[in-house]
Image (tube, rainbow, N blue to C red):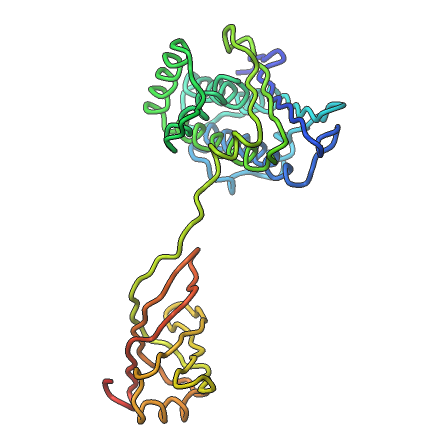
Length: 306
């Protein structure tokens, strides 16, 4: 592995034009550039430790894999030469992978990360997934190349992980573009006679934007600690409860008619004490949290069943 040399390749270069890109780096684009470093760390771990767990990396390994991003004049051109990191990965490789397998993984990573062809093919796939009328069209040669790439990914878990990780990196970069921005990736010698890849912020948003996630409505039943009860509303009650199983705290509304008189009195008497209470609730859940909760039935040891 000591004889491996990569001359001026692979080079990650993206050119972004926009009001905020005048030889500068807006803070919104920084996390995406940091994710390129994360993908380099992953491919190192795959080649050296057999998986992409970044906890394997030592301080010394992180230092020698550190990327330096060059920002060009005028409209911002972000350029990073990946050759040093990949050569170090080749030289250090001591995993169960064969030298041929490691070389394949690193070349695959270099092409996926830097080739305009991979940007076009990835966005064409995303456009078809969303069933957009206007999407990026691939030439027959590009379709044939993509079929070869997909077969390589199917036959190699490492290559599949690389494709997924770099796909997330592209999505992260494109979601940071504003409508008036434009991103350009220069065609390389590996891209055949194709023009540079160019995409506007408007087009990128249509392809990579995620639909707004909706709250999911479902019934839940469990034991809770009653922390507080507010009877100030007309007929209804708002409970402050804590899930005994995981400590999650939230508000739950008890509609008029759910509680009998004895239940109301018992809750008033015990609302500040740590007595388990069994609730059945209709909840709406979004991002792992309840946006609303309505109590359907209440059971306490003091009361018996409702």
